[in-house]
Amino acid sequence: MTTTAPAASSTSSRRWLALALIATAQFMVILDTSIIGVALPKIQADLGFDPQDLSWVFNAYVVAFGGLLLLGGRLSDLFGARRIFTTGWLVLAVGSLVAGLADGVAVELTGRAIQGAGSALIAPAALTLLFQVFGGSNDLPKALALYGAAAPAGGTAGVFLGGVLTEYASWPWVFFINLPVAAVVLLLTRSVMPAGMTGRGSLDLAGATTATLGLGAVVFAIVRAPEAGWTSGSTLLAGLGGLALLGVFVALQAKLRQPLMRLGIFRAPNLAAANIAQLLLGAAWIPMFFFVNLYLQQILGLGAFASGAALLPLTVAIMIGMVAVAPRLIARFGPNAMIVSGLATLAAGLVWLSFIDADGSFVVDVLPASLVTAAGMAMAFIPSLGTALSSAAPEEGGLAAGIVNTSYQIGSALGLAAMTAVAAAFGADAVGNPAELTDGFSAALLGAAGIAAVGAVLAAVLLKKPADGPVADGTDSELVAA
Image (cartoon, rainbow, N blue to C red):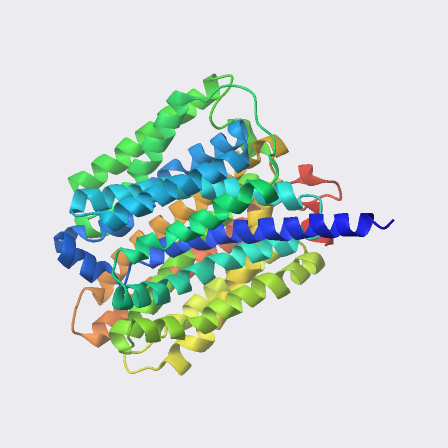
């Protein structure tokens, strides 16, 4: 009796330390997309970027990240999530070092692409480890909530840290900041993370190649379209070529005995529907965050730090909603109802935000509506993520994590590209004209509301009512009962 309590306490401590490392992974993956914003002008000046190419400091990361997520998930299943998690951190550290030491455009973009590749290994492995550590536990909803809350925290922290590091150190430190974090994670991972299962079979190299190149080409087309035009030769070539490669990938997966992605996984109840919800959630949420930030800076005249501070209530509301409120609502109403109502609430908040005015203010035009969108995001994200992951068999947890991460990232890229085009069509390219700029931002926010509304309708139609049994019904019983 005297040794049981300390042993249980030690096990519990390791679990929560493991969650801290997993949440840190999510935090840093998102931070690496937002931290460079303030540093871009100095990167441009020091490395000689042409203005039209500067966006690729961001896009090189996104293209590699989105293109390699499926492969990262499958590698987790084959070689063990812990091994791929640590490998991803090593790759991220190498990419950060290359990007920070870059003395030219090509080296900088190479470093960013390596960072994206590392994140594509980290993200699905982290989700797989979360379910390995907390699966079957009453703490699973809380763990998912803390994991989900790390994303908006990383996005907001990136704005502040980017400004602080650029101003008081130098722009390479927006990349070097990953190095001490990676060192701590690598030092602790082996002692607190389970070794986990490893799969049998070989890696489907043909499938990995076609999926990676296909997804990468589609993401490339999406992020390039607002700059080059949706009907430009480069956009069409990349987009159609990517879709063709994905068609080849699907054909290969249907024929191979050991495919990269077993197509039958989508027959798991609610897995496809939950991924559609994640895709449309990202497609609505990321444009909202992007255009609200532009409105704060370009219309209301706030600087980078002030706009980051203005977004703190939104971030705090999401974190509180995900950690303290969403699990209780899921327990009472079930995950399906929460996904539908969360997307509908997000749509309502985006419609409210679309009434922004060129002569408006943060307190009247942004704050209350942004808190409604935060509530919608908090309500929909956790149950859709949990449903997507728990619908798959345990041995395909890494693949399910790769698919759901890919869904959200592809949705985010597609939604931002599409709403950027909408904003430009309604006046957001009219630099120096606050009224027309605001009209463009408003149109984009209204378009994002439409995406969220479509998501709510599709979720209501496609999600099946969970049975009383275990995970096979497409939801995790702990998400309902905890």
